[in-house]
Length: 319
Image (cartoon, rainbow, N blue to C red; front, top):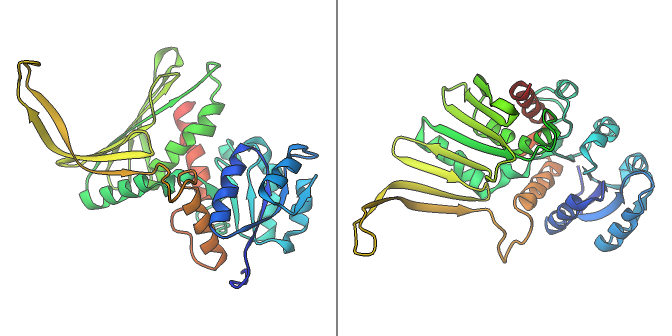
């Protein structure tokens, strides 16, 4: 456990674009970015180090892991296919770590992780930390039975090659696993010409989820929750509204047609504000890692087991 009187130190492996967002978040959370490395012999890592004031830049990421006594937390933000190279070493160190989602796209590799294994290792499914997601969770708890519908569009350049789905749609699948318990596939329809999936899932407490996965559609990510008389809608995931009742607009000379408009009674957003310009969910995620470092239990962040569940469900849906 880090000395609470000293500034905690973060080591970063992987200096791509997403690492910049993590740096901003961890700095705001009170961390010093003390060590960094890109890919093996990366030239961009030096510029990254200058940008973020990192004192120790290594040409070999393994050197950071060998010097683990010098830092408190490690962030692994390398391309997904390279994560396994470093993850096994990170597991041996037994220090808090944040691994960029989805950790790996191979469900069989991830199946080694169980619900209670490696609690200090967290997965960067940052959308769990959205204010909209937390409001959705409260809506489900408050309203009881809920019928849900999620739309997950994805770009597929090659038919039958689902790597982008494993990498990106995993965010939405993890949200479903976070909001609903033990989802089971009841029906899985493969659209003709492989343009997507229509999936019906049921949670362990009999809540129903209708999942639409549409490849190359000009749609946005969305989640709607229906209770007896209210509707919660996230579209996109960063913005949400709760509707109850209908506003009736009577016909007029300009428009001789009666209109029924859902009445919005509450709105919640996760978009950045002037007081917090950090990428949504990243600061809250960094603060939970800081709490983990102080010996507290993780509350919202995903585990390696959660990463496995997301890829396991995607595998079942896709193939």
